[in-house]
Structures are given as C-alpha cells and as structure tokens.
Length: 275
Image (cartoon, rainbow, N blue to C red; front, side, top):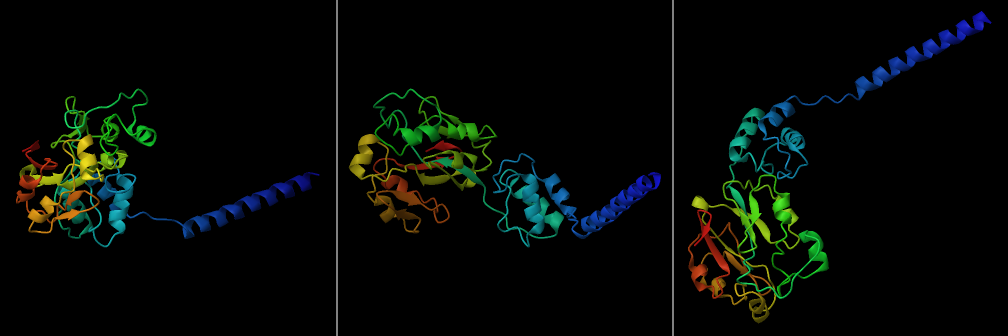
C-alpha cells in the first residue's frame, strides 16, 4: 500500500516536472520580445489617447511608428510637428512637416439665417435626432445644435454659440484630432489647413438642394450659381450637386470667390474671425 502511494507521488511529480519543461520550452520558442523603442516613442507622445492619429491610443500609435519604414502616413495631431520631430529623431528617420489643421464648421444656418419653423422637445443628441427628425428648420442638412461635437472634444475646443446656436471652434485649443468630425451625423465639420494667421476661405454650406429651395430655408445657403467657380483662376473650386466646394490645397486665398458669392455662403476667416 505504501509502495503504491509512493509510486503515485513519484509519477505525478515526474509528470509535473515534464509538463513544466515542455511549457518552458514552448514559452521560450513563442516568446514575443517588444522593441524597447516603443516605450521611448510613447514617452514622447502627449498621452491623451484621443484617437486623432487613427489608432486607439498612444501605445498603439507608438508601435505603428516603430514598425513603419517611414512616418509619411503617421502623425500625432495633438503633438504636431514638434512631437513628430522628436519621434523621428528617436527612430533615426526623417519626416516631412505638415501644415497645421483646424476643425471648420460648414454651416451658417444661424438663428438669424435659418428661421425656426417648429420646436423640438426630446433627446438632446444630434446622432439620435438626425435619424428621427429633420430639425427645427426647413433645412434638413444644417446643424441640429445639440452639441455632439462639444461632447466629443477632449480639449474643450468647441462650444455652441449662444447667439447663433452653431458650433464655435476655439482656434487656440483645437488640435485637429477629428473627434468632432466623427461626432457630427450631418458631416458638417471637416479638418482644413489652418492657414497663416488663421487665414482660410471655405464654403459654409452642405445643402445640395436646388438654389431656390436652399435659400428659402436659409438665407446664407449656397445656391449653386457657379459664380465662384467661374471667378477662380486656380481650379480650387468644384461644383457638385447645387453646391460649391473649395479645395484648400489649391486655394491661394485670392478672395475673388468671396466677392462673387451672392448669399455670402463663402466665408473668409482671419485670426479666428469672419471677415
């Protein structure tokens, strides 16, 4: 009896030792050693985990930077060029600096320009309202004003203007992370080049309806007349469905289109203020 028990103990001990050796061998064979440069890059990044770089967090972005051959398609909007220069230096590669971007609200349907035709009393989330309701005005393409963009911003860079009831972007706080762009269900916010001294020109309208209908619902709507298109000598303006669009990469800020727009749907901004 004693011999049987002792034999069982020895067998179990042997199986345990053998299993341990096997597991150790497997662990060593499939061991993943992380590049120490990932920690170095992560330490350089802002650490806000905003997702503006296209990755779920700064750690994931650091891993992508280390794994990439170059940083052409990788950029941290919060840290900007200064941060990416440090990342490039840590990895021993070069970068091409990018123009600073800023969030731009492409809707000028303020209370004054876009009269309210009814009153809404329900949930205050743009995403939900957009799927259930056209809005308090005749324009079903304009800003709903419930502030999903405000709630999405981790930097306090956007708020609803109490007078116009439209989102207002703070030039000093906006880091172009793109959170507000994703949050707007009507795709009214886009990232554009900030411009020297904050100088930029863009069409502040997204309504593709025919001119007469668009203007009836909003006095500042783009009516698709094409006058701006004809005035631009640089091919920066294209005409879509009853709607003009200015390509900021081609725009030279010559201002000719601004003067031609009959509804003032084209906005020129300088130092954060509309001219």
